[in-house]
Image 1 (cartoon, rainbow, N blue to C red):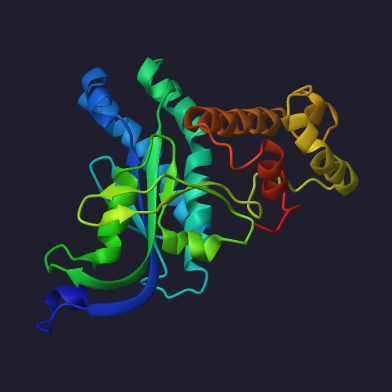
Image 2 (tube, one colour):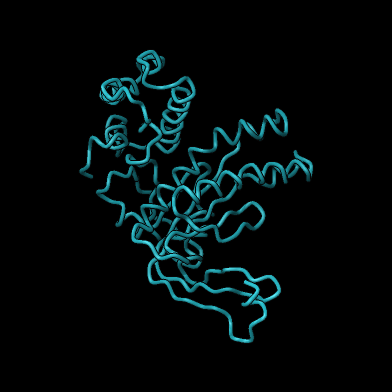
Length: 287
């Protein structure tokens, strides 16, 4: 970096033909700002974005920048990768799943404030070409430029709170791979016109249900009974079977209820609950 800062050559620029850009926004930030002090806002964002940084490392995602309460990342550059869309989808789901723990951490660190207990994020994804370049010499930064970036930002800004919105390009890549997606009604997107977009709900291969339990027989039994369990049977059943810890069981309940709430709010009818959980557990690969 010092060599670059001292060099007289033009800025470093590269073209990437197929990357997936991710935008994530802390929702309702204006209201949060009214209820928290400046120090508390900094503490909250540090908790949120520090966890996001960890998830970037886990999913081979490159963090581009944070601007205020917006987190921007990319899959497929600067290091070129083959699974850019899948990695980005897995990362987006991981961000969403991290929110319950982030809420608890915020309350532990900052205090019991109602708005922190209901902290939500919105995520948007788009794939396509971008130009990546190192901008500036005194304080060089890697930046992404292109229509793919703009569209990913639009996906985030027009998503409903707590949702992951993706374009038809993302849907075309994930379709048939076991990812749980559902279409939105086409709507007008600023600068883009009418667009058909989709909400990404879940992914089977990286589900937190894939525990490292050595009791494989117990775990397989737990998988086999999850669909019935998810339909409303005893919520302590999985824990009693010894397959999941108390924390994992609680997280499972929270995740299930989260999906159910979103389906009810949006009046989803195209995906039955049983099909969602079959896909989630990798037992159903046709779409």
